[in-house]
Image (cartoon, rainbow, N blue to C red; front, side, top):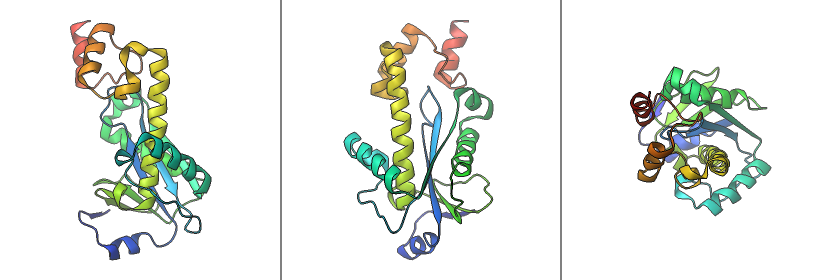
Length: 206
C-alpha cells in the first residue's frame, strides 16, 4: 500500500496514468443503514467538470453530477455492507469489504485503485490510499458523489416508511433530534446494533 499524506501534482499525474478506479465510502458514522461505497472509472475522452468531495457540494449539484457520472463514466459500481454485517465485522472491516465489492462489480477491470483515506483493503491490482483524495483525484470525487447520492436516497426512502425518526434530515447520523427519536420510538431493524447509542438503548430496554 502506498500512502500520500501530502500529494504533489507530479504524484497525481503518476497515479492517474492508465486505467484507474476511484473508490470512496459514505456512511461510516450513522447508526442506521448500510455503509455504501462506490468505484468509478472515468473516461478521459469525456471529462466531467465540477467534480469535488461530495460533502463540499450542494445537494442540487451532487444530483446533477451523479447523473453525469452515470452517463459519461466508463464504469460505475456500488458496494455495500448491511447493518448485520457491520455488527459482525465492525465498521472498518465492513467498509473495506464494501470497497472490495464495489471494485469487483466494475464491468472493466482497472489497472489500479485509488482510495480516499489512509488505508486500503486487499485487491488483485495495485491500490493507493490518498488522504483527502476525494478533493484531489477526479475519479475518487466521482465515487464519493455516487456513494453519497445512493445512500442519501436510501435514507429518504426509510424516512418515508418511518417519518417520526427524521432520517431524511439527519441521514442516520447521531444528531440530538435523532437521539431523541431513538429514545422515544425505539430500534428499527435497520439500526446497527453494535453502535454505542443503539447498544445502550437495547441494554436499557431488554
